Length: 325
Image 1 (cartoon, rainbow, N blue to C red):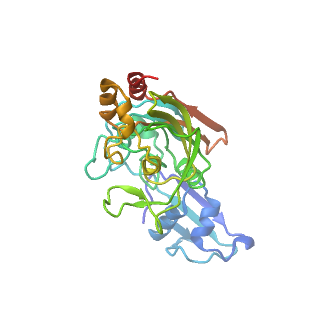
Image 2: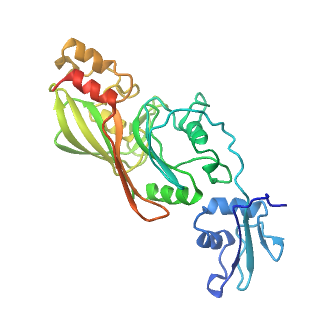
Image 3: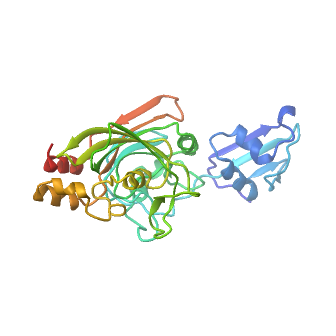
C-alpha cells in the first residue's frame, strides 16, 4: 500500500525493554498522544504501521525490545460534507480550535432531516485548508453539542490533538460550563436536581427522569432573579452531561423552561399571573429559553486556561423585557 504523497506523520519508534510485551495499539497510543487509540488501531488494520518493511496488521500484536516500528499517517482526505457560507459569531480561533456563540436554530451536525445548513457545514467553509484532519478526514471535531434551539458558547477542535484532549476533558468534567435559562415558577435561591435520565417509555423522542435505568444526572441551579412573580431567571451548571439534562430536570420538578417545544406540554399555572400580552409572548416564545453563557477549559497545546463569558441572547433579553420585573 503506497502512502499518500503528503503524510501527516512519518516517524520511527524503537521499542525499549520497558515497553516490550505491550499490545501494539497501546504502545503507539502511549507514544503518539495526538492520535486516539481507535485511530491508531484503524491505521494498523490498513497496513500503515510496519516493522522492517512488513506491515503489522494486528492491533493486539505484542511488541518486542529492539523493534523499530514505522508509523505513517496519511494526509487528511477532503471532507465528504460540503462547506456552506453560513455566518458564524467566532470569539476565538487559533491553529487548534474555535470558540463560537452558536445561534438558535442552527443544527450542530448533519443528520437525517438536517443534511445541510449545519454548524459543521459552516465550519468546513470557514476553515478551508486550515483543517489539519481528524480521523483521516478534513473536518471539524465536535466534542460537545448544543440542541438546535439552544444558543451559546461551543468549542470545536480543528486538529486531532485538540479533539482528543478536549474530548477527554469533557468526559472527565474538567470543563467549566454555565447556562442561563428562564423557567416557569419561583425556584429556591439554590437547588440541586438529581435523577437518572433515560428514554421516555411512552415517547422515545423524549428523555425523562427514570428509576431503575438511565444514567445518573445532577444539575445545580441558582436563581438570579424573579420576574412578574412567575418566571425565574436561573443559572444552571451541569455536574454530568446527559441529553436534554437541564430541560428534563427542570420539567420534572414542575419548572419547565419557557418555550420548550418538547417538555412544556401544557400552559403552566404560573402563566396566569402575567398580563395577557406578556403571557402570550412567553407562551409563544419559539424556542427553549436556554443559553450557554460560560465556557472554560485548558488549551490542549499551550496549557493556558481559557474562559469565555457572553451576554444573554438578545431574544431572551427581549422576552424578559416584555414580561417585566
